[in-house]
Length: 521
Image (cartoon, rainbow, N blue to C red; front, top):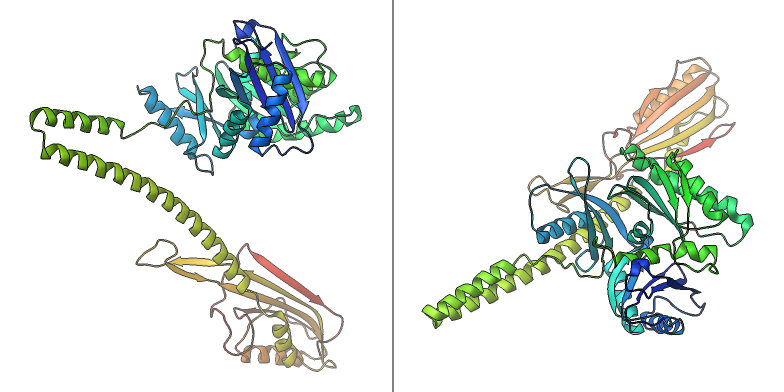
């Protein structure tokens, strides 16, 4: 099977190595061999040297060609987004730059060394849509290192999504294509030539039949979450569902997903052609995207490549070319000092470009630092606005009437506090400004008195202390009192850290309750 014309496609599906190879001159038409091997328990897959050595051994044992290899990235390892492009005429290089810029704004990690590629399509309205994928730089570097250690010659780093689409021979329309792997299920909705929906359901394939019901329930829940967003945004409903697998589990997965997606059309369950009949149902479903990835190499359409063949556009290339042409003209006409000056100028411009890149990275790091700084200050100031409830209860106890004359039934304390940053009026950029912690503490007192004078005496002492703003919570009665005490003080002791005017309530509230049947003394 180790033909020089054969193409090998490999993928790590969780802790399992999957590989398929086709020896035909036309990859899409050849018969396929495959291997499915669990990663040994003692092997650290993240160790590129060890993983590469083990991969090389397995491919050699299977006699697979390692000079033409497509590495297929599982959908769970990449981020896929649809990006709308302007309909104006642009060069391919400019279009690539626009896609890279657009997808870099949708992710939270640096994209300079990440693998980025896209498939271009045009919808019925004539809008240009790019289905873009991005693979983090760390994962791409790991793939390259493992391939180097295994002696592989990579011709492409593809995506399982593209493999599934290529493996399906369905006629044009709105079709949901499903691939069932060991670590999850991938669902791709193709609307004409446009990928309208792409999601991986991280639900491992069950190893026992009795776990099938739970497996299908989890698929239902996972798919529902993503599908609600798709439909809510005006997304299309599939006309039919195609499951690239075989067996009872594949049938039930297809029916479950069709029900979630509201598909009233046909559910087709069919294994990719060219796989031996002796292969297990699980392996047949898992390698479908690999067979499709091999087929992509014989397709007229361009396949997605995350391996760096599309490099970022060099914005300064034209400028440097013009400088070099100018230098050549000066050499021919004037030569000498002018040429040296132009060379020096070009060197300075290159250094400026390099320093601008360094500045951009430092600005990004400083922005992340300010974000952490603001979160920490917010937490610290919010925690600092916690009143000493024991001191407040003691202050009320100190002015409370004798238990013979009055008894407390319930005391409830509630805090509304928030941390607020006030920018400097002269320079509003963070961290120029001041953090404040406006708060309002509310204490509700309910109890009984033998005479109304005792309740009025308590109210008078609370007001006279200049600590609380006292309000009645209900109508005055001869034998009961119900007061609400407002304060902005953390403690009733002298010189507290407080704000003089009680703040308005915020949504950020903490409370504590104290209830008893007797007095507080």
